[in-house]
Image (tube, rainbow, N blue to C red; front, top):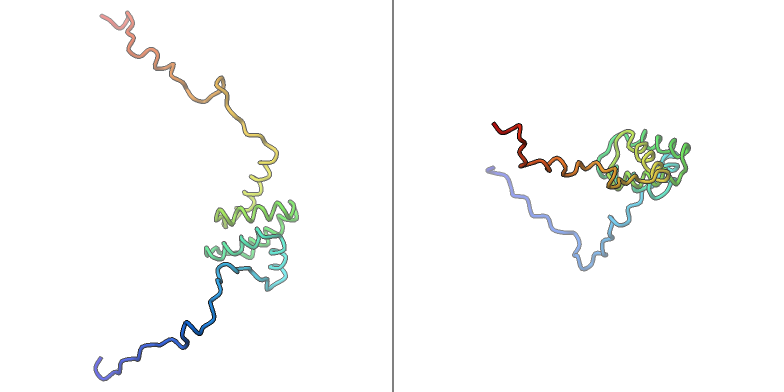
Length: 143
């Protein structure tokens, strides 16, 4: 635009050689509780802390009721089971409604049920017996 002065370029306020080294802020991420409810949630263990960090980083919504649900599930199950489920949810990126219940149910079933393995006699594989008559003609088919 005519008549407007160009802005001077911004210059750094300090030289990099005199500035103190920057800390790695990503490595030191630890959530701090601001309410009693958040403190109780974080007291569940490291799985709860990683769930909170990952949920916030992914932009998950309605974290307050999900934290309350986790606290209620920790009372029904053990604190260790709830923390383990929260850690699994954080790793898997599962922050939707009822995800924690689903993970707790699955993890509880892992400890009591042995996996079923099919034997050759009880396999679901149909086999190749249907192909055994391929290419064989019968006397009825001939005219």
